[in-house]
Length: 435
Image 1 (cartoon, rainbow, N blue to C red):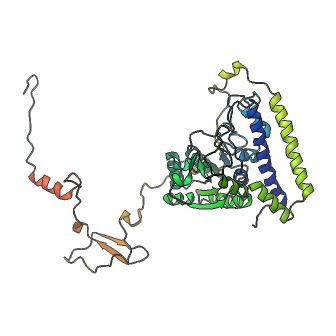
Image 2 (cartoon, one colour):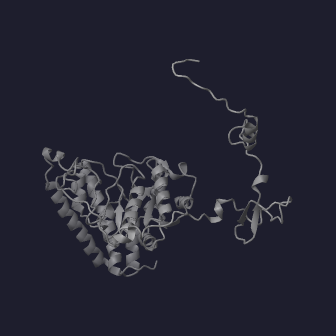
């Protein structure tokens, strides 16, 4: 595949994917030693998605990871020690030991929104971030991820529909990892490509091999560029496989063994190592240098985490409420007068194409020369793909009927009711008297 990345940046992709994998393997060992306070949710086999998508963003852009997107946090500048200390609930962690998994972010420097455990809820949140950036003139793009199971939530629909109507500069990565916990995709969605869900919102979508990190990067970079140009949002479905259970307590015995064997042959890191060698982007010496760097950094940061103290009890009451500890100010990168009256005022008159009437295709409904009674048609609607109008006489439409009887939506019943209704009787009520 042709890529816009320099050889050094292509090696960077390997560094982050391998760092992601080796970091998680150490977390698993720490979990088994009871040194991890929270849960460990493996992204084994999916590293190419987290790294490839986040690498396509610029420093000014925003992202909101989910529990399997540690690779995106590393690309955004977090260090392995942040991940170690966070899972071990140490006072040196980003949350000072108040969380035992991945619920942390950085709003000021790295532009990372903390994960939300309720699946799908990050979609409307990041839509709001994207819209706020546009309002402030920052020209940013916002991104988050969702799994195949999470794409069936109401928040997914509401958030993506809102992003579509607002044309938000927002990229949604749908990780189709084949299993929503223990439910296969085929048992929850009657679609082969979950990207087809974008059609319901009138937005663009792409399908990409999630285990090809270069394809993931190139597809995401094109989507980010489109969104930055004002042609978002965009949905990207990355097909992959979760090679471990939902969490460490889940052995994934519900997955057929041949399925694991197939996806093991599609391992994103092994495939990318072969690509780098075949294209002479690195040799054995360069690979050994990168691997040694990863081992050295992980050793150092793990020692730091294991040697860090747990938080004191007094710390629990701190940081619960903001009591003037910091200011929250918008970072304006445009003149405020551009979004203030009168520059922001428009006439509250909306043009509705074809007045919202039904437009039939010319080949299905033949055009009539007249209505047959000398009356002009009540509405003339251009037929799809043709300049010729289709005549619609509203008075000749059949009366609406309510099934199993007549009701308030029945036009004939409404006319009959008005004709038969007796004149209203006026009752006079007198104070202090009962009737």
